[in-house]
Amino acid sequence: MKNLKILELRLLKLLAVVLACFGFFHSVQAKEIVVSAAASLSDAFKDIAKIYETSHPQDKILFNFGSSGSLLNQIAQGAPVDLFACADESTMDMAEQKGLIFPGSRQDFINNHLVLVTFIHSKLQIRELADLDKPLIKWIALGQVVTVPAGRYTKHALQAAGLWHKLQDKFIPAQNVRQVLDYVARNEVDVGFVYESDAKLFSDKVKILYRVPLPKPVQYPVALVKNTQNLNQAKAFMDLLFSVKGQRIFRQYGFAVR
Image (cartoon, rainbow, N blue to C red; front, side, top):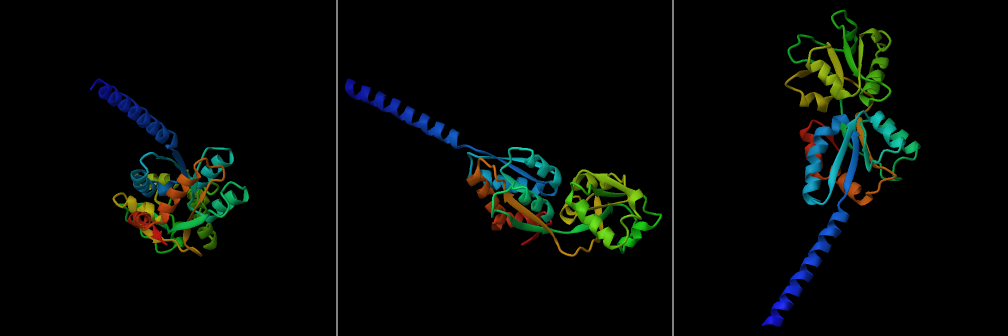
């Protein structure tokens, strides 16, 4: 009986060692995946991250949201990023030209539209972009052209309408589309250019006046960052963006899914 008890104790100790090693192994395998993404993606990405972390409980998705151009600059300067999602093709073109993304990993995953919004209780009516040149419109918020894709799309649309230079004195530049929305929601500007998905999120504070015509839809590309240390995990999160569940979430937040 004594020998049996000793054997049981030894087995328990062995089991404890095995479990400890198993726990250590899993802790070693746990990953923190850093995703740099355009500000307009923040709400949808957070919901998708919950799905990922439920099926990968050992991993954690860490987000860095901001203007696409600023995020690109951070990656170029060596920021530890695993996955990059931006709000326009030209920013990802620059990332590709600089050799910052994993070859062949770039894909477009959703579309959006540029819209003109105003304060929810405003009586303004805009039927065309030319109406922005009227004296009634004093302040126009838009993303900074250098770093914010929505700002670049705005510039292209206004240039095509022959209004870019005429309206310069009315412009209030913002760091990203969410800041534009804040200006409009607080009634600090008359109108602002944002993405339709963002406007729908703030539908209790702003209203859409006009969908801005563009040569082609606003496309959002995503790619694996070349220097990622978590390739498999970043790829798994990226795949989730294209899944039925991921696309459903994007649709719920007002994006045009593929």
